[in-house]
Image (cartoon, rainbow, N blue to C red):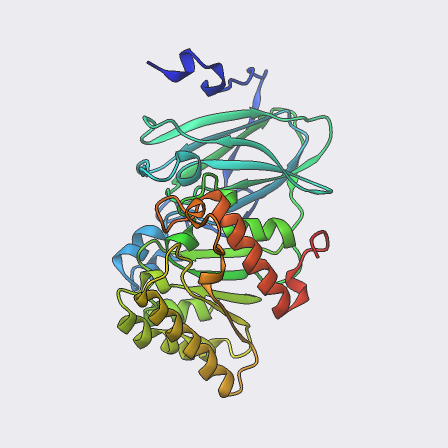
Length: 361
């Protein structure tokens, strides 16, 4: 039986038809894109140039089309917000809801922070795309941010507003270079229930600093070409967490300090925060891996680097109710991501107070 037939709260909410709609194909001059760019040749949104991704590994080439960390900022007085999305296929996983893997989240930016408006997500049978709409307050200009899916590609995104609505670009993030994140599936956002619940987005909600999510599920392996690309990106802080994706402790040892050296060639002064994997259970392998990461940190400090920092993933979840923090023992729940965001954010404050938000300090 269809659950929506016996519980109306599970039924997709309909929005009354307007007399007319103004249609905007993204990218558009009225909307500001962050965290993703549109590839005109391939006709899709990407997190890094596809030509560069193809030189790293097959997984990165595929996952660079996933829009984790993508955001669309705008301002409007419309009473309607509707999107039509197309993609190559629906990424469905048994341990992550479609609202996070393939859906969008819409927030209004208010004087006290971001206010949740709606999920705009596909049903399991929407294999090539979908249309979803929500009613807005309207009446005056309001600022909005739309978070892109964490584990799905987006070939096209069309926004529909009231025909006579005013549309303007949203306010930019603070005048600080983006925070750059590189790492595993946890970095990409698995398994948040909404794209805005990935830890980078939660931190961004606090400090209003733009971010770049280069988490590549199962494929963050610190290849030289990848590190060269990372070091070419302007950022205010580099958060490095690829521990989970190193095939072995030996591989991590071979690549971790090498990543640091290569990154420093292009970014001699950018602060680097190394993080070990946030596992629910500790084991000998995990201890060995954390020691390798800590050794990179110590060696860099001994050589005079004053802009390198370390945060133990073992510290994220504490000792109580540890199993409540992850879906499958590894990938965080929203609860787990919230705790991660809190710990990483506090560490950022020790690096530089500029990474803090006034409301939370």
